[in-house]
Amino acid sequence: MTTVKDMLRAGPADTEAIDGEALARCIQECEQCAQTCTACADACLSEEHVEELATCVRLDLDCADVCDITSRLLSRHTGGRSDLTRAQVQACALACAACATECERHAAMHEHCRLCAEACRACERACNDLLAAGL
Image 1 (cartoon, rainbow, N blue to C red):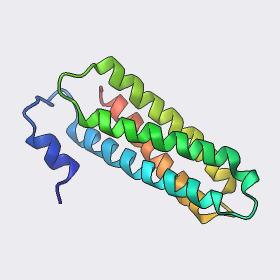
Image 2: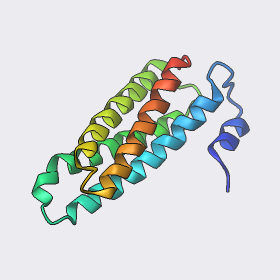
Image 3: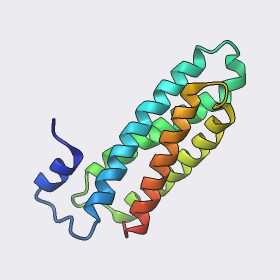
């Protein structure tokens, strides 16, 4: 299976200006977070008191969409607009923080929310690390 790092190295674009490790980690964390948030939203919808999880479901789905587009945008690093990419990564960190905070509220009762909060925090850190690395 091809990894994110392999694909970033295989392309002809000069990525010297970007920390390749931070970029690859951010892409991977975004992909993982998108999947986890989607699964968490689905699990929330199956819970007995789903109405209490409405905000969680909305944030899960919003975060999944933001993480998905962020990973795709970061994977297209040739000739892109760095200001747009930076704004997207900032938005992703914000979405992950909001989703994690909401999922943490439900983590004691729902394992899927605990796992989702962890994935969101990891993605938030990866986004902030990439921004700090000079994206």
